[in-house]
Image 1 (cartoon, rainbow, N blue to C red):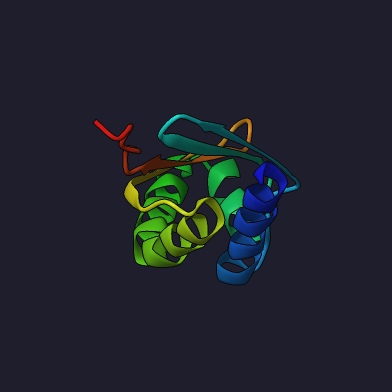
Image 2: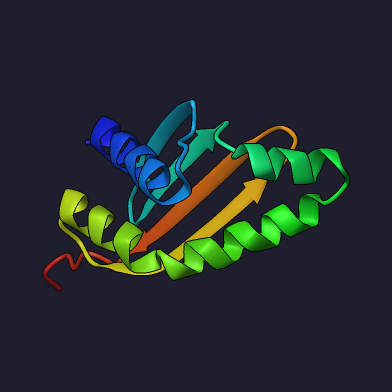
Length: 111
């Protein structure tokens, strides 16, 4: 399942950003799925960052993730079979690391 999550998130990046991360690793613990992605900034984003405009890249990535939120959430829900109740995304420029966090609806224990 973890490989499927990683591959799916990388695929979504490639689809929406035109370029995907070079490495991805996912973690699933209790009510949380975390996908850590390394590399994958576009040439334009790297140019902005190298010219001292890293904050512009970070803001643009946040806006973009908000725009494609539903696609990311739907993909995770399909893989894990549980509703996503919260989705958070962040990008760090140097080193190039992005993190996608999905909080899942709590499972009931029958009580």
